Length: 338
Image (cartoon, rainbow, N blue to C red; front, side, top):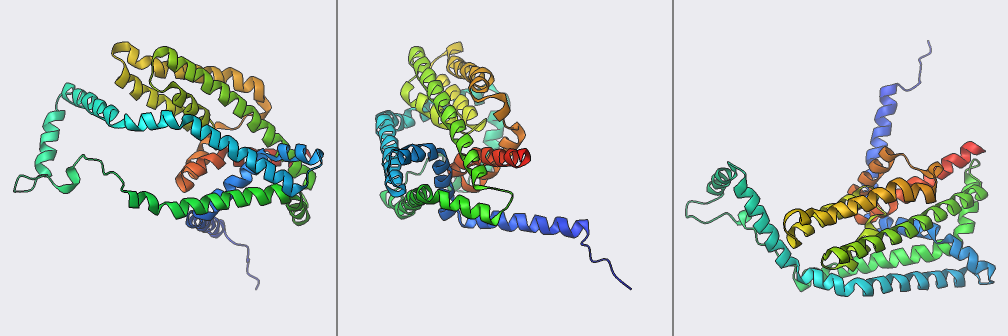
């Protein structure tokens, strides 16, 4: 008597679930290496047109990759030194802003009936018999020591080295890598990978230009409104707008809090409202017009990808989430076309 050896749906689903859990655990465990390496590969795909341009000028792969690496590092350093004064002033003013926010929170607490009684009850529960508060009830913020800051140095340096090394060797050997992938996967050719690379590069070059203009508009508007550190608001808009949905939401909340601290009355909400207006124009008109409707992404898929990679790898996960979605979308569309 022959038995049906075809696995059941439940067994297959269980194996898939276990594989997903194991993959997620492996990705989280290998974050110090995989996160900067994957970020470097994503950036390498975006910078591929610059490599091709330098190659057409007669530079070898190693020399072209070195030039691209130097230019990118120089631009990143220039951006850092440009915003460093504003960032330092913002950090120095943080205790003052925090004190003003505490005053605002106390005002809101007193304005809401019953909250004071609830706080008193909680305070009594957290107070020991000698009348001293429990150690966990202190609101003082611990300031990291110099030793704590230096302890992150080796890990940060290792991450930077992994990032730069991966970026350099990906740029120099991406053609051979694409050929090896096409040899292993017959349905994906080297030309398909190059086409997807070109489309992703054009997409992110366009998004970068849009974000730069968006950041300039926000910086100018904040300067006109009298918000402190308008350049810093513009740079934050430029960088965080790469993280779809979550980035603009973070800027809007930050501007709302900053407006409440800086201004009085209805003017407190104006900075956030101005930013939301700019963001609506950018998302509904500018980006669709310049990027094209055919390159639009499924919002749910993008949001879930952002949540997953941010939860898994933090800020670096948010950086690689959208490029991975775009890359996958283009590969699927290319395979369907063939």
